[in-house]
Amino acid sequence: DTPIQSEQTAVTAAASAAYRNDRAHVVHSWSAQASLDPVVVAGGSGSRFWDESGRTWLDFSSQLVNVNLGHQHPKLVAAIQAQAERLCTLAPYHANEATAEAARLIAQAAPGDLDKVFFTSGGAEAVENAVRVARHHTGRVKVLSAYRSYHGATAGAISLTGDPRRWGAEPGMPGTVKFWGPYAYRSAFHSDSEAQECERALAHLADVLMVEGPHTVAAIVLESVVGGNGVLVPPDGYLRGVRELCDRHGIVMVADEVMVGFGRCGEWFAIDRWGVVPDLITFAKGVNCGYVPLGGVIISERIAQTFAHRVFPGGLTYSGHPLACAAAVACLNVYREEGLIERVRRLGEELVRPALEQLKSRHPSIGEVRGLGMFWALELVRDPASREPLVPYNATGADNRPMAEFAAACKDRGLWPFVHFNRVHIAPPLNISQADLRTGLDIIDEALNVADRYLVQ
Ligand code: PLP
Image 1 (spheres, protein in one colour):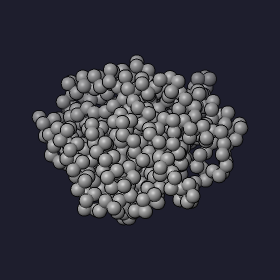
Image 2: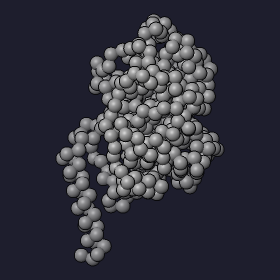
Image 3: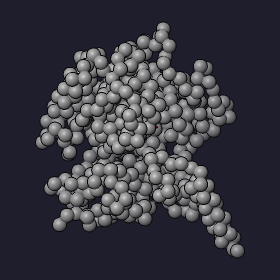
Image 4: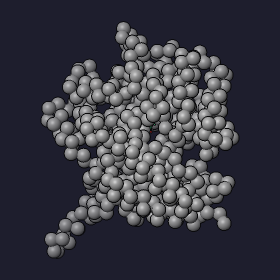
């Protein structure tokens, strides 16, 4: 063997050992295990990651829309290393510097009087605890959430979820009720404008409340901008209208910002765009880019008072985990010091929106472009006139072929896309370079030729 050959042999052997062990022992999320063929990822840096043979992808999904600063950000890695040397873990009844500082920075970023943080290990646990806080605070049981939403995979969070992932967990948590949120492109209310969609969606929610009995409803849980179900940006006035309904009936408004919090939409929290202050915010992902699992609920002072002399009804061994919180402190400081939130807002409007509108003018398979900041979706259709989706809702196997081919065309060209049903989501790291952003958009442009082939003639 030449040295190069033996290096390659070693890499192949390592990759296949990892692959074999994975296939033998690892159960992966939301997949039929027999059909899986995972990439064995060897490393990453910034907006790219690679496998053991050195094949590299530009990450337009930020993994699961969490790696907001890309892979291996030196400040986050250093903060985790420093904390690991000092103190790796701690029971949650102690205080420590990393947890306290992370909570201070989160409270500083949050709107209004949302000043208290209960830390969890991820988004679903955040939603579970938000619901419990709302139930204890109000003494009521019911929780309303939207169709076309995702809130996590634990018992309560999946019951609130309004997409097919809920089906496997039914009958789920009692007391959940679904409503339709605004989605003008495929309106449940047959609206023909955003303003009408807003008005009708609010009237519908008011009707649901009336029939359920507003005095029985503890919380309305909704994503400020719906994420996994299609980057649905609510029309102006919608979130304010929900706030008013909650105020009128003493209902706790929970903004689920697990995916969109911490800069994704060009605001600290997406809801800030509309100047609406919810009672609780759930967060995870972007709080520390997922370098160490972390999530939580930000609680208004008023609601936090409920637990001043009454036991807080929740607890987790890893609540406020020092390693995770040290990563959060570093991450939140990077967002602020590097002006990333403003950058996202500016680039979203000046670069991404016009580039995607251009794509739409060239590719008739794009039915709609929507989004904000570094959070966009292209909704692909077979027929722009009828808006028939490129693949049916929840398609699998052969039915999903056009989207699978689109994804493969991206991956072959070195781009890792986020594809869900008939949509391409565009969610690169917030600090991606403009050159990489353009490269990724060019690859999507080429790959869309695959989708155009499926247009009805
Ligand atoms: N809520 C929203 C809006 C999400 O997008 C997600 C995950 O994607 C969750 C909750 C669940 O978070 P986790 O997967 O960390 O439990």
